[in-house]
Length: 224
Image (cartoon, rainbow, N blue to C red; front, side):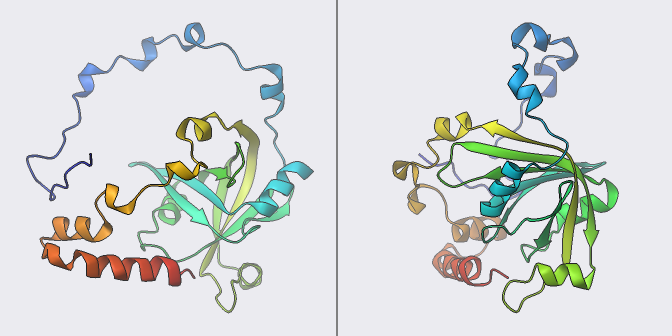
């Protein structure tokens, strides 16, 4: 059963519960609830890339990047051919910023707060890799040329100085059965992009299929 789509401002939209219902996080004794991490976990948090980290980056095709500013936080996806995140040295990686929805929230955040988090997923593998550090936006032509895809050169790149890099167990992947064929969703199980755009803009719902066709042409063909 899918949730109904409500136009912006609808009184039927789900309301967030009152914040007063949440316990004061300062009063939760986390050390009493959770065991400490094992020695292996603690020692696995490194301040620089080792050869095995680089081996994973060489095959990485997807990660989520987290940034923030004084108003809040943001997370967005990044994808590319294997090795699209380049290793500059043991403390530095770089990746291109390719066209998306032009909100450029990550870039705008980095102009205010240079902290960054990267969470890598590896299709078929039951492990994550995480990089936390500080980042800057680069427009150096020589650097951008190294990140070209075909004839396309990115407008900007994000250079990340690594504070910590670590592997994270894949329990979340297996809880979600993420790589199982039976976990693939039927597109009709949820509202389509066209359905949602029509509801949010007041457009004729009959045009939803037209919007969907344009959406899939763009996300499959206009990658760079």
